[in-house]
Every structure is written in structure tokens, then in C-alpha cells.
Amino acid sequence: MTTSSPLADALGHPHPQAPDARIVSLVPSITEFLCDLGLAGQLAGRTGFCIHPRALVEKIPKIGGTKDVNIEKIRRLAPTHLVVNIDENEKPTVDRLAEFVPNIVVTHPVTPRDNLGLARLMGAVFGREREAERWCDAFEAEYAALRALPKTAKRTVLYCIWQDPWMSVSRDTYIAAMLGELGWEVPLLGEARYPSFAWSDALVAQLDAVLLSTEPYRFTEAHADALEKQLGIPVFLVDGEMMSWYGSRALAGLRYLREVRAMVDGVAG
Image (cartoon, rainbow, N blue to C red; front, side, top):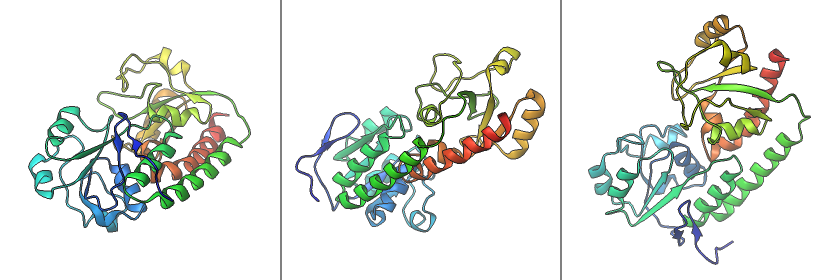
């Protein structure tokens, strides 16, 4: 399978196929996906948060975090392509890197199905179209299985990503779109994409359940148990990678959503 014309990234920039690309990825979930496409040998650099698949990424040089990037180290690695994400990487940093990295591939999935376009973009740019199409077929099958579930009650759930201060997600985030696949919605807490909030009786009265994410804050079952006693409503710990990562974990995330629904429905009624 070949691409007749370049595919455009999230900013509309076309990227011709470059099967011999030397890649630095600043997006942990996409680093994992590139490895799954068979491109680990072409990854010249990755962030310290790119931890999957461990056996492969531990051999790839680290270039800092998703935001505190070591510019000079990336310069020395001499990549031909940099993979970035609008939500995870800061534009001033990317602009500096664009001064010497020839190709900046910008990604921005906002719904689970946007992973299909992401997969095809990565496959087309880096010469792994067949592998990407197989992944898309698997994604479509999992998505169909999720959509075939019997309809249940709509719920309002608060998805917490931080405490001190408490922070959640807005309705225009990828996480909210994942929850939307279950017919659930998050409460309106302000205009910020990741709003801070204070607990109140009025807020709790809106909620069917609270979900505590294992990332970026490392919530644990102990946090969930303590908060449930405080609020008097069901509180669950959920895998943040499954709920928010693109690519490889987005496929597993569709299966995980079914587990989350069963968990919440089993308690919330």
C-alpha cells in the first residue's frame, strides 16, 4: 500500500513519506505507538515520560520532559522529524526546535476516533501504512463492540486529575470524549480546559460518581476510599493512561471503558 499524496498533520501541513526518518517524539503515547508500528530503531530521542514499551524505550536517549525539553541535546541528535502534540508540548519550545528540525509533525486527537487519523498519519509519514491499517481495523472492531453495549443511564461524573488544588477536565477534552462514549458527561466547572474547583454540596449533588485518575496526580485506592467517606457518593480509581493516552493505549482504552462502565454501574445503580 502506498500513499499517492502526503497526509496533513493537525495544522494542515503536508508531510511526504520518509521511511528513513530519524525521529524525536515529545509525546509519550505516540512514542509507544511508533514502537508498535516497528519504528523503535528510528527513534533518536524521547521524553522521560515515554515509558512504554519499556524494553524498547529504555534504549532510546531521553531529552527531558514534555515541556522542559533539552534543546541542545535534541540538536546533537540531529532528527529529521519531531512529533509533537498541541496539548502536551509548548509552542515556544516547538518553535525553537523548528529552527533546526526540518519536519515538525503536529498531532491533536480530541476524540477517540481521531486515533484513526493519527494512526494513518504516522503510517503514511514513516512508511508503515500496512501496520497502521491493521491497527485501524482492530480499533474499529473494538469501537463497534463498545457501541453495541446495551444503553444504560446517563451519568454525570467528575474526573479528577489533581489535588491541592483539585482539578478536573472540561467537556472539550479527550478524556471527556472518552467518557462521552459511555453516554456520560462531566460537570461544567468554568472556562478552563483543566479547571480547578472546590468541593461543595451543590457540586456533589450533581454527581453520580467521582473518578480519580492515576495520572498526572498519582491517586490511589486510599485516596478513593477517603474521598468516598467524605462525600458519601461512589468514588473510583481509574487508569489515567487508558483514559487519556492516544495510539496504542487508545485501542486498549476502548476495552477499558467497558470495565469502567461495569464498575460504576455495579455500584451507582
